Image 1 (cartoon, helix red, strand yellow):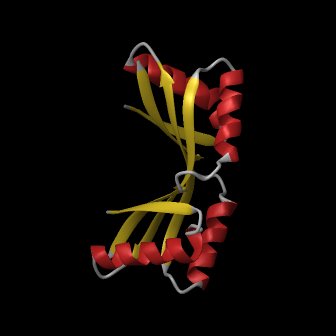
Image 2 (cartoon, each protein chain N blue to C red; image 1 turned 45 degrees about the vertical axis):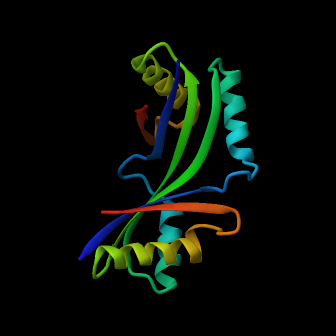
Amino acid sequence: MNFTACITVGLKDGMLDPEATTILKALNNQGFHVESLKAEQKFTAIFEATSKSDAHAQAVSMCEQLLANPVIQRYEIEVF
Amino acid sequence: MNFTACITVGLKDGMLDPEATTILKALNNQGFHVESLKAEQKFTAIFEATSKSDAHAQAVSMCEQLLANPVIQRYEIEVF
C-alpha cells in the first residue's frame, strides 16, 4: 500500500541560519516589517509500506541517512 | 497584532525539478523504494498586521516580490 510522508527539515534551535537572516533583511529592506523568519525544507515522498508505522519508520531512516543532517538539523514527519 | 504566515514555495506543475530527481535517485540507491518525491521550501514569518486578511495580503506581496519566482513557482499561504 502506498503512503505519503510529509517531511519538514530545519535547523535545530540555537543554530545560526544565515539563509533566513538574509531573507529577513531583504524583506525588511523592501518595506515589510517582519519580526522573525524561519526557512525549512519540505519533502513529500510517496512510497510503499506495509503499515502506517512501517511508513513512519522508513521516513525516519530516510531523514537519518539522507534528507537531514542529524547533528544540526531536526525533522518532523507526518504520514498519510 | 502579530500574525504567523506559513508559506510553502514549490515549482509549478510540469517544471523540471532536478533537486527532487537527484534526491529521489539517491534514496532509491540507498535501498528505499520511493515512487515520487517533491521538494519545496517552507517559510514561517512573524509580522505585524491589522487583520488576518491584511496579513495574508502582505504574505502574497512577500511571495511575489521576493520569496517566490512567480514565473516558475507557486506558493501557498496559511495565516494564523
